[in-house]
Image (cartoon, helix red, strand yellow):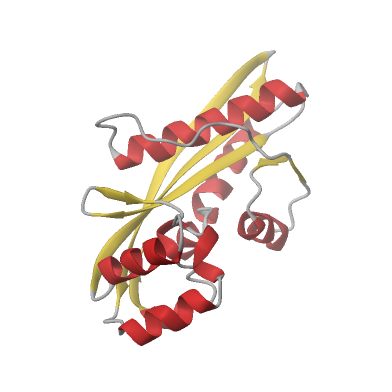
Amino acid sequence: MILASGSPRRRELLAAEGLVFRVERPDIEERPWPGEMPSSYALRLSFEKAEEVGERVRDPDAVVIAADTIVVKGREILEKPADEDHAADMLRMLSDGWHDVITGLCVRHQRNGRWIAFGDAVRTGVLFRPLSDREIMDYIATGEPMDKAGAYAIQGGAAGMVAETAGSWTNVVGLPMERLREVLAGIRSSQP
């Protein structure tokens, strides 16, 4: 298995599952197309990551796992913040309300000499409790928000900001393990 991601959180989730894999960082441009819906954007990026890594590695036995996670408030996509002010703006926007975390998941493998890719966009609702400016600034001072979609890590310092989730918790971390297990089981059952 190849994880087409540089995310340490995705590596941790796969390792916790007991899977043996290696990491190959994808090299693609991550920018939504004009008018592209958030689910379509996350799914497209996961396919592009899986394809780029699969073509570069060229291992016919490889199962390539790729994902892209975004945070969505309304129709606005909140990716990684550009700077601390941007992170603060995102966290203020998320404070005291629901938002969605969408992970595009793509698993690419060969069957009968042909590449097959399965993809899905997994959505989890997240409710933040009201956050004070002091809490937001203290959290940003930890540095944790700076490389996270939506400027937070549910498994880290933002755990106390979350009042409720609706759906897969691992999806919010960055890889919907429940869905990935289903896909991998399907691949195993289809092999001779």
